[in-house]
Every structure is written in C-alpha cells, then in structure tokens.
Image (cartoon, rainbow, N blue to C red; front, side):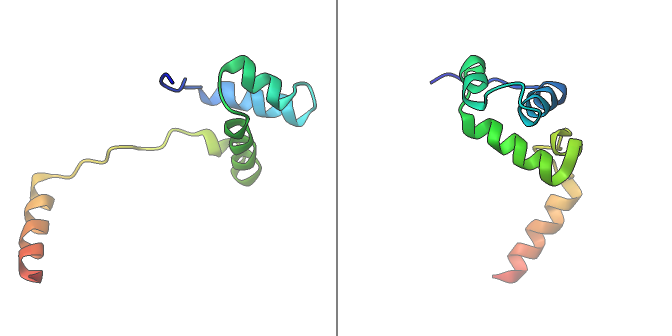
Amino acid sequence: MGRRPNFSKEEKLKIVKAYLTGEISLKKKAFDLGIGPTTIRNWISNYEAMSEQAFDDKPRNKTYTKQFKSYMSIWLKQEK
C-alpha cells in the first residue's frame, strides 16, 4: 500500500459538509479519494466535536533546546 494522501483543511471541510448535507455518499467518496471510509468518519466526528478547528495544522516533531536537553540529562542522572 502506498503512502496516504494528504488533504488540506479546505478539502476536508468540503467533504464533511457535503456528507452532512446529504450531497455525497461516504463510501463512494472514500473510494473516489482512495481512502477508507473510516478516515472520513473520523473527520466527521472531529468536526462535530471541534468545528472547523478540528482541521487546523498541529505542531509536530517538537524540538528541544540544547540547554533543556542538558538539564534533562542531569536530572535523569540524579534519579538513578
């Protein structure tokens, strides 16, 4: 199986709103997009819980400063 496609916030909103208004079939749209229907169901659940904020970009791969890493190293050594 290949890498999963990425969808923009706007694309997800359009799909979710089209489903909620009855314009599209969940299974057919999922098939057309090459994704599982569970993915769209998750988008719908997230949208219902958090509105449009559900699709905002979230920070990933947080990096830590050298100073913080140094403090953590010292702290971990003290814990032993």
